[in-house]
Image 1 (cartoon, rainbow, N blue to C red):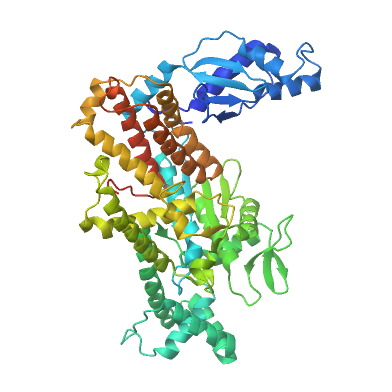
Image 2: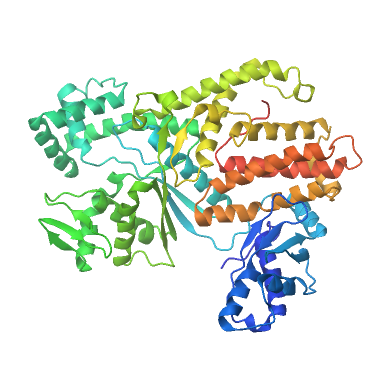
Length: 598
């Protein structure tokens, strides 16, 4: 296990669990051999306490089973015994038992102040315990089609997950497993050669890739001769026929030009390792599976049966060709054995669960995947459902992603123009209002931010409605509200007149002067634990919830006390700077580029 670097941020939960565990051991020495998992719940609606735990309830239930400590009649009695233990540590000020058997925990002011001051001086340094090499497999469009709305969640979730893992110090390989070697290429090559026989000399102008695909599919479905010829082209492509390879390259390049426009606008960085990347090793993969003794013949096809699954892994089709299963097995082998990765995370819609589980189990049978040393995880997500008011009779899966980004920009632009007139009258923001020259550029950023945040804040397992009005709402849990909060913090820092905050942070120390200030500081210090939970459970919406809570707490603070022109201005400005640092980093992690004017 790697050594935790000096001056990194600390995990509040680990420190609190350690302190509570010592109290439990002191109260009940004979429980030392038991492994009680202490779970903590952050408290956000009570300024007097930061966390609570149900450990006393778990212990009481164990006592009842083993007939221990019969003088303790309830969970409350157990909680009170633990809370009564006098124990000195640097983190916890007091532990109290409530009437439901929970222990409520209040942290020491000095600990909070020291951690905030450390963050101000040392910055956000994640306390990595063990460095891993991690593949994140996301986005994965199909060549021959433009990206549509159904690619949105995978692309946005995957980029955000990569950013969080990288911030945590992990080595991340961003994989775009594009569909560039499937059966559809037979019909696309056939259609290209029929419509543009001289394409190598006179390169055709194909402005609508989807129309090109639909025309080829229509022929494939309605013309038997075209279908047979297309199937022959698939075999010729797999055999690396020069004519087919040239046609494949052209179609692939057209597709990549289109989806790279999307990646650029979404600020997504990803490396292509498409199906074609594995083509040359597929025979070797099949041979390895056969030598392992796990392959059997089934009506001419070669398959691998997996216990608990009716559908087998098909590594060779009855016609001798390879398919998606073969490619995914090859990819697993490359990533686990050749790249020596510790963790593989696959993003796709939840309906693909069984496919991935088969590949995971097949990789175990081959000995490539050896849990818990290695991990293969499916990060499934629900579907995006079209808002009837927006899409009407249009099928949601045919809505091009580029069109949605354009519309988001136009709607944001309209909102900016309306607010420009309002903000000119607001004295606090007069120096932080966008100029007309900035409208178009900032509207693009705000439109993207609105879409991304609305996507990421959802429970990823659930379906959600795509609704521009809700995305661009200035109130509630939206990117627009978060950006407004960020701009307001910046305006306070700038109005302070402090020119060099680096020097200011060195010359001053944060000191708690108000109960709400203390409460907000603790919320900021939860950053490490939130991020660890996000990557452990693959729940990016928890980070969104955290950002929203911080912004709500900021709004509450403005109603609690003054920041500028106050005897406590210096320390409160330091807390504003920590808020700025946390929000700026959090925005980056969810792929949002904040604006400094609104």
